[in-house]
Image (cartoon, rainbow, N blue to C red; front, side, top):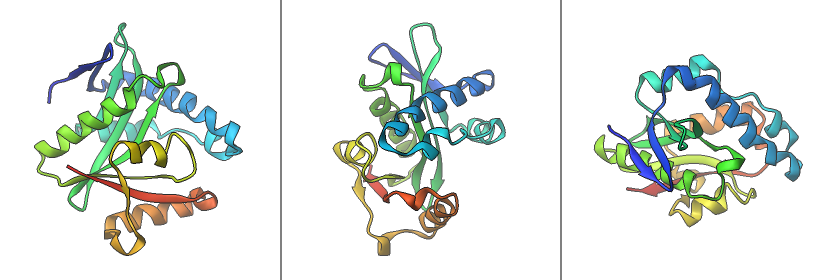
Length: 176
């Protein structure tokens, strides 16, 4: 599966010992939500180490590492209904606006193509500038409700149960 280099970042599979650092990246990436009045999102705990390890063991937990080889961003994904579903992509604010998220998504797209998957999917907040508008610039398009696959419906139901639907959300898809 190799690795990729972009903007001084190295994209590679996460090491088990790095999983706590990914939780730190997640907490830092969540902080800007507080400025949008989304305190619950900012304060939400990152995925547990057991959850991150499941993605890592499956080969679907990738990091963007800085010049010291320390993770500054990560992405976890899993196949859902013929697409690679981006479960989480988080970039530490100190690495933001440098193409790191875009590079991680491109890396995930390459892995998805290798697996014969047809698209990338994700769920996101529609009114957060670095969420749906950002993904739209990268070629993701909103999926109308009737077009959601059973797996995406299940993901959206779990998100609603977690309280995420207090703010407008959407499923988005980018064909590969």
